Image 1 (tube, helix red, strand yellow):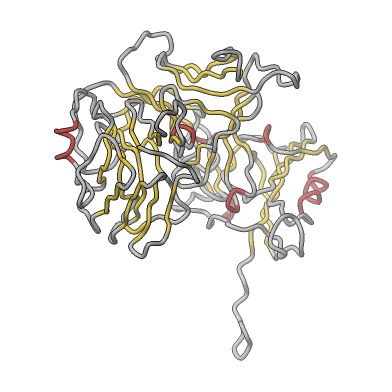
Image 2 (cartoon, helix red, strand yellow):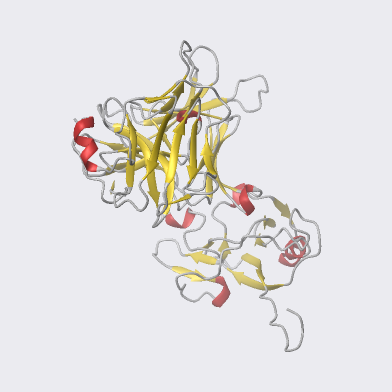
Length: 440
């Protein structure tokens, strides 16, 4: 499987891409030629409304990677490290507030990198560090260096966005990988790695996929935690921290594992559908080649049919809970951004009004990751959720008596041909229109 997704209008180059040729393929930031190193006092200004979607200001020595201004979506601005042959952004600054591509923006380096908008407002900056130069390494790592120091003052490898690349360590203390749409996250625990949905600005983060290191011994409190690293031989390895390089305790093997493929560049990216995938790039290729997917089946993805959708395994079909399991339109229900608690969340306050949908033959693909209780009847399972304003639904298995509580907005469910699988779901009730002559 090949993926050609990238930034449009950045030309595709063969492997031996040199800086001189790369400069003509994208627009440089106004007033500055792309450089091999940024020194204190450096500034570059984004050309407002530039036609090219990427304006480099800094190149790696191998000419394969560049750092600069990136257009995100139709009209937003971010900073990014881009793999030039494919136009793929390997790292982004992802500030809370993106810049406006149609307006000027300034990148400056004076001990630290700072991105400001046309009014001087701060969009993004590296932490409160002291650096003397910025370089982009041939690994794609963006580094702020201090003269006479071997350890970087700051580096992008320790601050990932949605992608990991070769030999980049990912630890339990690393910021999580966050998908570009901000809906999913990859986190590393003491002995496992897990994928999470992100609700309410990250306040609620239910797990929908987990991989535990086989030899990590999570029950041993004295055992060091694991960290992960993408290996050029075609796997994502989990290692024990410390011990002079780390003892490997597990691998996620890719399709090309043990095939002795050399000379390729690899990445692992958390996509906007919530799947974690690995790809490799062959010099001279026209697109990335898919090499691994954490979740193989569409119906196992957490939002494949959207909010209140039901995915039918083995069929390219979505149904809707909210219209009697009829065929799904583009979306069954709007995505929820707040819970049903009138006090602002966290389970407190009075519960807001909601309607109830009950449905047979539905379940949750990742129910093993959900909290559950055991009840004799489906009615008791409903009661466990009904009065709790942070609970959006419950799925009951009449065979086992397990009641799985959905303590987050209802996303995609899975159809199962078993009448003992019963679902109870809350749907936020739309506010009643104000009567004439009354205050809204």
